[in-house]
Length: 80
Image 1 (cartoon, helix red, strand yellow):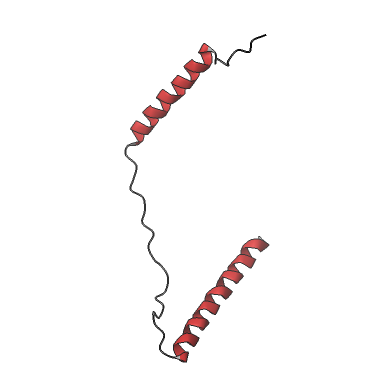
Image 2 (cartoon, one colour):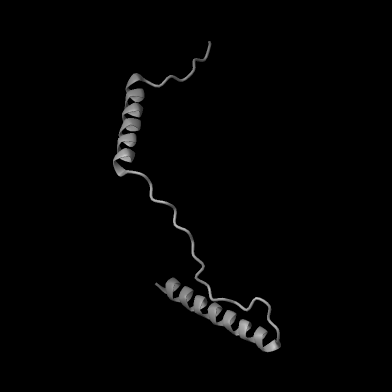
């Protein structure tokens, strides 16, 4: 017994074609896509080359503040 390949029915082919045409019409009616947004840097400016221990300490304090803020926000979100 020879196995035959799968051939979709004519009805299925018609439905697929109609869906493709409808998708094309919808995309054309929507117009061109807007340009992708560029991610802006919203972080605080860090000291590029810390010169002293006090500069290092300032950076460490800022990092700790951010970590605490994120931890607090995550615990609030997980409580809901």
